[in-house]
Image (cartoon, rainbow, N blue to C red; front, side, top):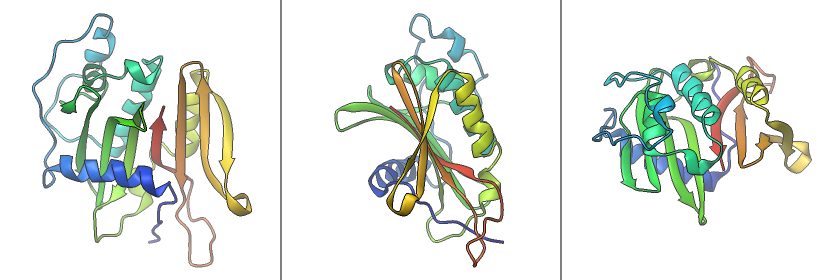
Length: 207
């Protein structure tokens, strides 16, 4: 079994994963008292019945797409719309910082966080191995990068790729009026550098 190390920007990953670790509460899902939905938000609030059960990596990805689909901008992502899309009770730190995190099978953890970064609203979805462990990408690769990003294009986002030094692929960006989504890939590779599976979604930033 081959494992992958993340190539996402260190600053954004550290901020989100630090928050996720604090929210995981030794592996238990977060809980908070539900708040009334704002006008016009019932379509997301009622999307999934509230549950105390953990959600899977696949559900985390699919429900992130639902949240993006139902939002015109990051300002539309509220505790109520996140709670409605994910079917879990989010933890609110303050009106601009809230989210949910839990452990996943296979030594993974995920977090979904809405926060203020450098004065601007941003939502982060992160998958990270639990500290001191190794985790197989196959456990978080349904839907894979291709299928996840195809859904964004179907919502009317224009797509372009971002590359770094030596033309290294960093992420694909998706833009439409009022919203930008960056999807960071991760690919498991053998010792010789060859890919051993499809690209998976490691992190999603919504600005």
